Image (cartoon, rainbow, N blue to C red):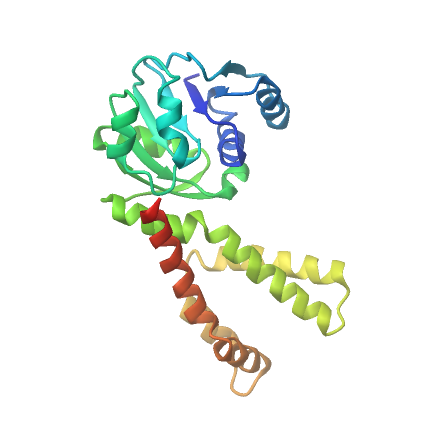
Length: 252
């Protein structure tokens, strides 16, 4: 199997590795052997572990998962020229990566937390020569979408990369609303999970507006609740959330 090398051992690296472990040989590079061991333990398989200082990237396929602010620092500790770097760093341009790390090519990618269960929505852009390989690699952790510019991937980061946090807020708030009205917490959680599971299937083939119209009968319960969401400016807040996250990605 092809070997994929993770530089960085945080939550995103672990989520991606969980999705790739059945299809690729994995190795991980980091600063602390204890943390690398914890990464391996969480992954549940045996992998090669390497310290960052002096690691040779020569001819390797790298998934770069460090903090964006650390790119320049780690570049001083790495040796060799990678075949390809797949970067998951939010707001970090291809030009910046190439300025600090030696590589034949760069593809920017933005998976999300669902990579750990092979349900990520991953966006990609970069060296077109690696487009097919990138789609195959990241396709192992869910769906992919190749975009034509770095601006687009920064916007997609605000939508799909940050999206699980937005949906988690909605899920928690709806559950709390049911509990407030008298439903037991465990029942509310089970119902909310079923709701999200079913909606996830429906939204694959239906426009959101059509799903809404299919549920909302005149003067009914859904119309009453939907009106409350509009009164609370939920639609505007969601639009603003994507805007703020996009601008933050550009700042990074």
